[in-house]
Image (cartoon, rainbow, N blue to C red; front, side, top):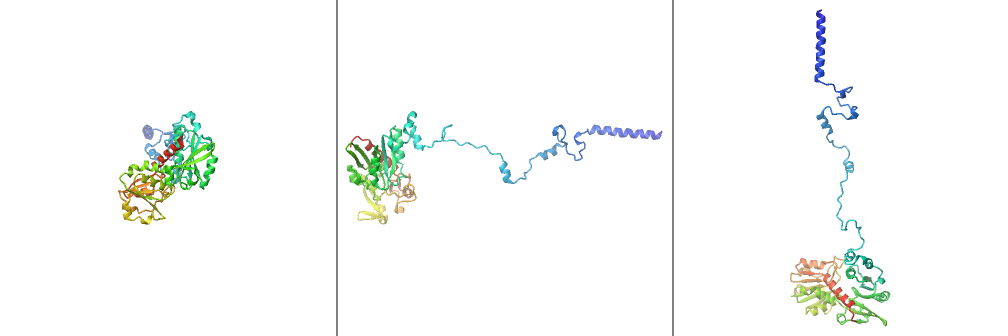
Length: 372
């Protein structure tokens, strides 16, 4: 009897403990048959809540990649590219036409734009050009053609590089619409014997930079002019005020035109050349006293002209001061090394861009004149 009571009490105690355990620790099916303590993933298609949220947070933190840096770099998503602002309106394709052609077309009726495209030389009513060699530095073709388009003229300006000035004969014959042309180095003096007549000023100067072609039933005539001297005065006359003596570097055609211009202004002048004579100074003669005495220096040599922009006349730049005026007839580049060195020593400087425009305007007036 006593044993039975003890057994019943023991069973009751075990039962009560089991109930207490069930109440305090509910059954978690994710631990069934899993002695590792990790959550099972075969419930609800692998979508289960973590058993230990804090531990899971640690596991889900980004871990350093074991891949090499170069591979990580290649797998990074590309950053969106910022589209650069186009110079052309949206939807408009880039044009291969040079800027001066595009700009000049703005002044032309779009319906007539096709008429002003560059065509073979003989297809224009009037043809003009530049004769010389080399001509890569020249901007005259750009300037004249821009003007023609803006004024709606059926005309064209072309560069004619000639190996010899004798080629001028075939140039005039082969282009029956050629009405005039400019002349540059090295032919400003060589062309004179080939002309039928010289303007009085050009004859005095001894150099020609503008030629007018006169065509009549009796034949073709060439008349030579010089507009360099007028271009020089119009461009530099204001700066020349207050100065009295000038050195002209070089003895070529443009040098002679500059001398004529300075003579017209009453400014005493001397030529300077590598080959000195009785009336032409040599560069070796440019002493401190000479540089002090002459307050104007004009570069009429091609030294410093594009593309050889690293060259300049061999004068003693250290003797320059703020009282000096340095003028360069070169139009390209805007500032030559000659000008730069002068500016560094306090001198006032100016290039030949304005002179080019002024002499070109004078040439156009000659070609457009009805007087012969």
